[in-house]
Image 1 (cartoon, protein in one colour):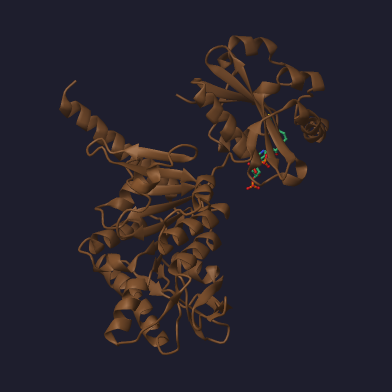
Image 2 (cartoon, rainbow, N blue to C red; image 1 turned 180 degrees about the vertical axis):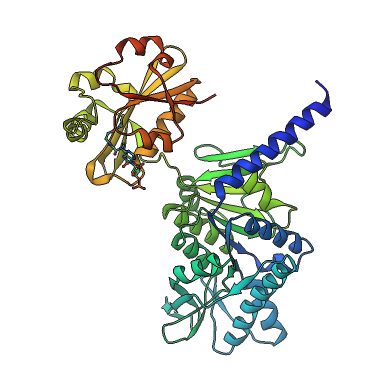
Length: 450
Ligand SMILES: CC(C)(COP(=O)(O)OP(=O)(O)OC[C@H]1O[C@@H](n2cnc3c(N)ncnc32)[C@H](O)[C@@H]1OP(=O)(O)O)[C@@H](O)C(=O)NCCC(=O)NCCS
């Protein structure tokens, strides 16, 4: 096959990929924390143009410029010294006007650059802060922490097509300004706005070579075929927690802070946190719209609470199933049925209690039925059912199956919303066709995996 053909096919695949991602992220909120050092680099206009493209394509972007490097610059120009303790600046009343000036200056630089891309932005005082206080005998003065973010007001500005920019300043209930961490602010925003993604754009790569030695559980290391260099491309939130707990691990303050906040974000509903070197050409677009991303991602593990069923779980599983059997939603299974098929079942467990279950029954070489799905009545609508289906589907993929199917009388719409498609009895594997209960008249839905 000619190289020309291969490259045309690669390009076509890439275009398809872009459309899929663009569709998937329409209307989603992405929060970007942008390192102040990036703003002085020649690559900065290109970076902002890419952010403007996201905005123009229906992704709701929120920008949080960091003040750090610019604050240092202004304090140096005016000859004011501030101390740092526990890695934080002590914001004295003398330094505070310059800190505010630097924070708003970085916001203005972003706004100017967006204006060059014909994107309208708005800077607002949407953050209530309170004092960081006195810790270990050190008074941090006007250094603050995020108390509340006025999410509704920010959302309203986005509905009017503005890009909100939040400088790293917050105000107390009586209007006292505080110097707050842009990392903490971006995280609070991402959680409060139910953002799909949180980005930390830095100058230079994070978690590169030093972390590759931690390869293994929860850590994915990728090798660049061109240079042979390896880097961590993603890790789970549990892996991030394990890394943070390694005694004596050398991590600079902002890196540790970002990693800790990525855990907070993922634990509170943000799907993915991306660490990107903002100085690399097109880095944001590659990360969002393709699988060519060069950054590092921390992601929540949706299957964290799911594990294979053990015999000891059977009484709990039967307890969850019973009311659903009574309602006619589920076919009755006995203790013996579950014992015989024990290895097919998985359970969802929180705080040592089973809240949901489901099974994957193999039929022939290529197909499996997802069955016995049940969620404890008090735990419905929390996404447990969808995660069980996701887990069982992943298991089917791991086994190399062609697809999965379900038989249901009352949950058609739910399975359709999970990407299943209506099918007929004739499409069932022969063995399952024979046991199909024609009186129950269950509907059939399938999902092809290859
Ligand atoms: C179906 C079932 C597994 C869903 O569990 P869950 O953890 O509540 O599901 P999720 O939280 O992932 O999804 C909930 C969404 O699905 C929708 N949904 C739930 N049951 C539905 C049904 N029967 N028809 C259509 N949609 C349904 C809900 O509207 C809900 O949407 P919302 O969160 O926006 O309100 C659970 O309701 C259950 O145990 N049902 C009885 C057993 C059953 O029918 N099993 C399937 C046949 S094997």
